[in-house]
Length: 322
Image (cartoon, rainbow, N blue to C red; front, side, top):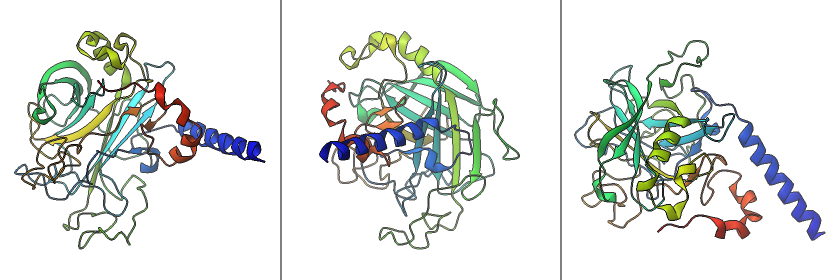
């Protein structure tokens, strides 16, 4: 009986895992097709974007709706897929997003940033990869451009996105099916709704953008000598490698001066990445994400609990942080 029960669990988990891999992603894919990125600390507080103004405030963690999502569509090889990101803002200054979103990457999972994938909503109007200029977790800054990536090609929401489109900016509730809002969440802010989870009276907005994974592959392989070799042979970097992520906004391409998701920017001890509002370490950076499995380590997706029941024995094979 135990053998049959174990077989049922394994088969069921593999079916769910295979289903997740079969999803074809697009800029307007339902948010359920993305992985909610847990940023190691509390959910992102509202109205903590500092002096940068409305439109840069990442909001999430209320009513079951998160502020940062990631997804990966595998390609014909392990180096030719597409990385997708979706960020939720507490409002918008205008109908277009003309600021910057910086997705920080910790490639060798040592707790410090290595690169930024930057969405530049104005000059240079590109989705590009930059060096992380800071030398420690609390000094995150933008460095030099390592790959110019691709020009921003916004989809206007009419018809279906074309193969050339790589960005979509839209009010929440328009053009994208969101995760079901939990109106009974005891942590809801006053006035919060499914389309205004910070309750500030402004409709939330989604920015979804994508970049060819091959650009990141080229950057990492060329830079392998500067990464911790104990985390893997980065000259062979592909979608089987895991990496941590964070997301932050800014008004210009050279600084990280807007909102760090997962960090309370209004708290005196919590206004920098990797620091929780109570001053403890941990906020801002996700657990490692494996693109080829579309899961975080430890897995945080809906099917992770089942899948984990028979993969616990393989945890020791995971690369360790130095």
